[in-house]
Image 1 (tube, rainbow, N blue to C red):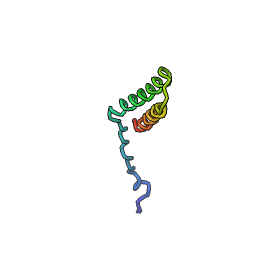
Image 2 (cartoon, rainbow, N blue to C red):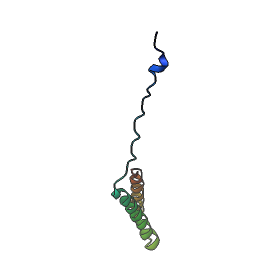
Image 3 (tube, rainbow, N blue to C red):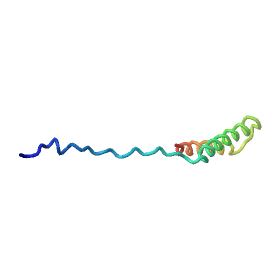
Length: 75
């Protein structure tokens, strides 16, 4: 008597285990908040308090942009 196909498919394949979520090193968070704070501090110091001229607005915006780039690496 031939074997039925349903008995052959009795064993199911087990799915692969779920990968553990990645964790960032602690310095990523500190770097993010540090760059953001220094960038905002530069803008506030040179444009609100001292009404200064120069490239400080662009330096501050660059530091804020760098902080957002670091934030994309934070898990």
